[in-house]
Every structure is written in C-alpha cells, then in structure tokens.
Amino acid sequence: MENIDWNNLGFGYVKTDYNIRCTYKNGEWGELEVSNSEYFPMHIAATAIHYGQESFEGLKAFRGKDGKIRIFRMDENARRMQDSSDGTLMPRLPIEKFEEAVLKAVKLNERFVPPYESGASLYIRPVMFGTGAEVGVKPAKEYMFILFVTPVGPYFKGGFQATPFVIMREYDRSAPLGMGKYKVGGNYAASLVAGKKAHELGYSNVFYLDAKEKKYIDECGAANFFGIKGNSYVTPESTSILPSITNKSLMVLAEEFGLKVERRHIQVEELATFEEAGACGTAAVISPIERIDDYDKNITYKLTKNGKPGPVCEKLYNRLRAIQYGDEPDKYGWVTILD
Ligand code: PLP
Ligand code: COI
Image 1: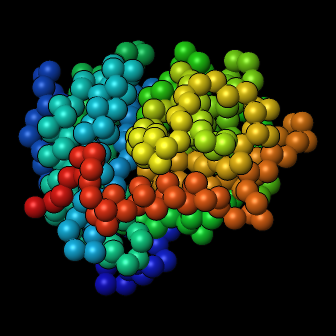
Image 2: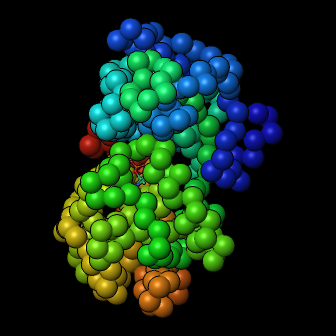
C-alpha cells in the first residue's frame, strides 16, 4: 500500500483491505458481510462457472480538493444490476443493499481512495453470480454478491488522449435481441478475440457495428460512442449496447452546453461527417477517438485535427470530472458524499 504510485496507476487490480459479500439462500438475501480474503470457496457445479449466470457493475469514488470522497450515481448502477438480474434470472439485489455495500466498502478502504492531485480514482466492482449447483441449464437456487474496490488510473494508456479504433466485421459482440444491453461477463468473453486482434494491429479498441445488418454503429468495446457534428451530440440508439451511465450524464451536460442531443441509428458512413467523437464509460471516462479505420473496406474516418482531442470532448470531460471531484456544484444530485 505504502508503495502505490498514485500518479502512475493503470487500470488494474490492486489489493485493498476489505471486500463485502452477501449470499442469497432460501429465497432471500442475507446480511452484508465484511471479508479480508480475496478468495471464496465455490461448488464445482455452480451455474456461474458452467453457464455464465453472472453480472457485474463498475462505478467510481473520487477524492476532492476538500478531502471528501464522492461516489458517482450509484443508484443508477444498482438499478442496472437489477436489470442484469432480470436478464439472467438471478434475484434482484435491493437498491438500498447495493448502496449500503458500496458505502461500506469505500469507507473501509478509505486509505485507497487516490489523492485529488493524482487524477486517479477508486474503482468499485460489484459482481453477482449463481453459486447453487445445477447440471441442467437452469437458474441456480443460491447466489453470491461480492463487491471489491481497487484504485485505478486511466483505462486507455495516456489518459485523455486521442487513440485509434477499428471496425472488423468478422466479429460480433452481442446480438440485437441478445444480452448486449445487460452487463454480463459473457459479453466480455465474446469480445476477447476481437480485442486481441485490434491491439495487435495497434488499435486501442474495437468499434462494433450492429450484428444484424452491419450498417449502424453500436459501441466501442467497453464504452458507448458519441459523435459531435455541428451543434449536435449524436449517440446510437440500439438494443445491443449497454445503457451507459456516463453517456446518460454527458447527454445532460451536452444540453447544458447548448448542444442538441440526438439518440438515433447512426450509419457507419456518417462517421465521415463528425468533427469529434469519443468513447465514454466509467473506466474510459471520455476517451477521444483519433480515427476509426474500417478494416474490411480500407476506409479511414478521421475524428481529430492533428491527433488532438477536440474542444467539445475536452469541455465535456472537464465538466464531468469537475462534478465527480466536487470542483463544481453537484447541480443534478449525482454525487453521494461519504460521511
Ligand atoms: N458499454 C459497455 C459494453 C461497458 O462495459 C461499459 C462500462 O461499464 C459502458 C458501455 C459504459 O457504461 P458506464 O458509463 O455506465 O460505465
Ligand atoms: C466500466 O467502465 O466500468 C467497465 O465495466 C469497463 C470494463 C473495465 C469492463
């Protein structure tokens, strides 16, 4: 712990002091338990490890200039985890229990919340999975919810810098009537091969199109997409993307800046008309997109001038961060300050 280099943290796992657990048995969730172990025993026939009955979340806590710790929109993550439960036939964890677990874990690991000046944050990772034994494909009768925290720096190397993305039609991440709208592990397993290829080709991430027609923009690996065109903030409407809480927040901030928010289908070719674009998410914050290469068609869509983040991306990024770190008032009630 004493050796953490706050200014040079990547997006990886750092051991912290405590995690929170809660088990579901006999039709109900138990009490939250605090653990200092990084492990737990699991049945060899647990549905999570055979049939992928699991979901997870990602949110962050920030230390402000005033030393206070702020957690961003945890009620939204709690709700989205309930949606993921509905989509995987797992029991819903009550919103209050989710929030209590977040607050408890951050409080107990307060010394791991990075200092304000570092620009780093504490990533909060709730995860839920079927622990009950089944061999047939059916939902488990028992579940476990675990929440751990870990200090993180930027998801993409270099932080707020423009990086290149790639369209590769040979891979899909999720189907239009499938699981893409839920935050379930299988979607990420489904993205590993494409992600590896993209990295090997020198791209920071895969840029997915809709799986059915390969005509419309879906999202960018583990982040939503937005483009800036004239006075508009344009973001995809799709049934196969995760409803990003960051994107939802940026839409509000974009309107605050006088931009028109358009949520609609975006054809791939429309990329040529955007002046700026970004990938947005809890981990990605706003990662400006330098260019998108259409690998199959040998077309490049340039989305920056001189490879530098554009002014609208920068303004949105600064405003979002200012709310999260408490530099500007929490006008929308997005922030929970830890006691
Ligand atoms: N899309 C995917 C596939 C993600 O994994 C994430 C990360 O959570 C996002 C989008 C961004 O969502 P949020 O802003 O809620 O973190
Ligand atoms: C997030 O932004 O919280 C994510 O879940 C992205 C990724 C690390 C899976």
